[in-house]
Length: 76
Figure 1 (cartoon, one colour):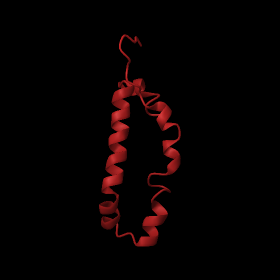
Figure 2 (figure 1 turned 180 degrees about the vertical axis):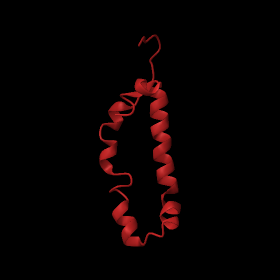
Figure 3 (figure 1 turned 90 degrees about the vertical axis):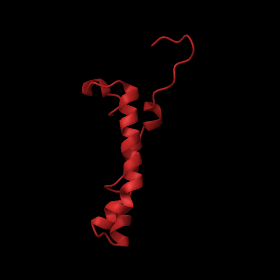
Figure 4 (figure 1 turned 30 degrees about the vertical axis):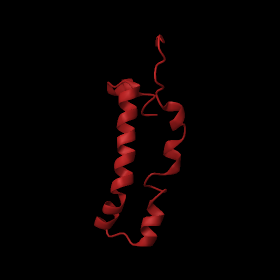
């Protein structure tokens, strides 16, 4: 939904997409350190990941929202 409503935030779809991609990257790369800082044990980490942290449903329709590159001569 963030990309679909990007203009509400003063962004075009490509800018919004890039922001979301960056957020996903940060969550994926920093999760272990964040869990360490929160002193989560193995069971708590498993329960959080894919639940409240990066739940699979947040990506529903993500591939459809991806801005497509323009083809030569295409007007949008």
